[in-house]
Length: 472
Ligand code: C2O
Ligand code: CU
Ligand code: CU
Image (tube, rainbow, N blue to C red):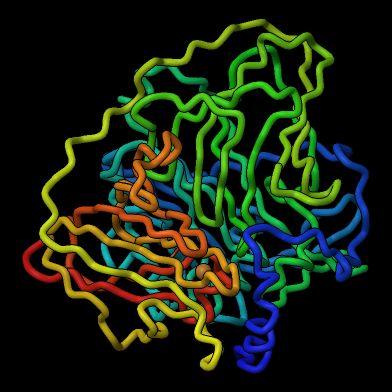
């Protein structure tokens, strides 16, 4: 299924495999859309089919659907319950979620809760797939703190294409500590999923491996360059990059600050006042934007400093409309990080392209579901020193851990910036960089994968696995 020769060819041009699309859009053939002509869509919140005192129970069909992405056209996509992106699942800390997925695709599927602390049977392990016509029940304990997670396909060697074709959605956990802060809620708490896509002249998605140059259209919650009407108050935006390979650097057209309050695993210790927020595939950031200082009629564009064309530099327009003015407050402190523990073990993780093998590797090896890369006693704390060796090709990578949230200890020996001061499950490592992370493996025994979240790399074997052993 993976064409090795094609990959090697890609390796040969890998000098162009830069951190961001190069702006060469020679392949682009999709219909053009008038910027800011379609309204932002919010994915519907999934309704439980049943509730018990401890558990919310859901049922989701994984199925193809025809949806409107580009105005006036239909695009064939893969969906959860017919929605593109999938419906948002809302969970409360400690209340359990059970989701029964029914696979109505003609390919295998596996559902992974990205960033979730979940038992191995419910983690969407790549070979724990749901066959065509099959059913699988996933249990999520929701014992972790409030945060923005997402669920997406993880079937062995299929995840890049199946996520590209639509299999992803938000999964939000709330808790009382988060609610007590009085952050914007209700219609002012808005999830925004950003991804790029390539369309043919019939408005159909074109998936090609490593095709970051061809994916010239950016979608926000499944629509190209939408507008969003906001009233003069403060909003909480939960930003997710669900692209396979593309990075975003968000900024406001006014030059005003963004107030970053959260990262992958929950709220930061304190707000990070910043002009730009970077997001690599798989990562989340929560930001506050206070529109109360703008007069109704003001238009503010959320831009992407990593873009190269009109289509990928201007992502979303906020249109301030008349409404009750309400100046937002920003708490000075959000969620303190616990003290750093003693780590018993340090491991080296090398990320590199193996040109001869036509694969991406971790410590020189390709993913093998039958090989355990590291056995780790449950409860232990480890430091991983992650190095991106791809300096001659200039290929960025990131590392995503299943099961745990980690903290970034340092980047090239320097303390991490405020954007990386909270819990993370995915960390970017640029060519030649070394990043140290620390995490504690608790809760469950069993096997969990870790991988590059540039999904066109993970399907080409940039994945490995740990096995947690002992008494959970
Ligand atoms: Cu979001 Cu193993 O991935
Ligand atoms: Cu994950
Ligand atoms: Cu990678």
